[in-house]
Image 1 (cartoon, rainbow, N blue to C red):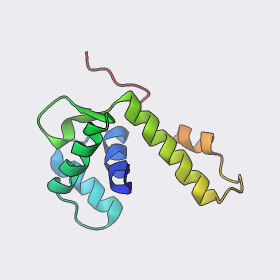
Image 2 (image 1 turned 180 degrees about the horizontal axis):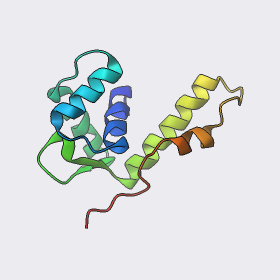
Image 3 (image 1 turned 30 degrees about the vertical axis):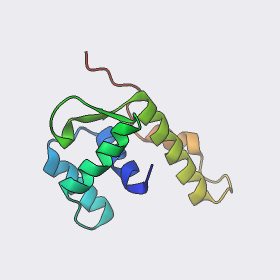
Image 4 (image 1 turned 90 degrees about the vertical axis):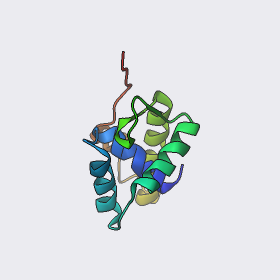
Length: 109
């Protein structure tokens, strides 16, 4: 998973974007550069190929993380926290991951 794909997965996992513009604006704000729907579509296609997201509609904002995607995102966040911590153990990964409000599992029955 690339950094951009992680950001896209995080964006759809944190909160349901209102629409495609909201999703692109959120990512643009995070990266402090313009993010287009084409960029997001490319990332979502790749994430879907890997089984990390699924779509329940026709727009970019209609994607959700799969259980495998949640596991992947959580694992990568843990690794990022450990890298920032430089192995010193000052930052408690489990505590910081609990602060993230990632869904445990999504079910659209």
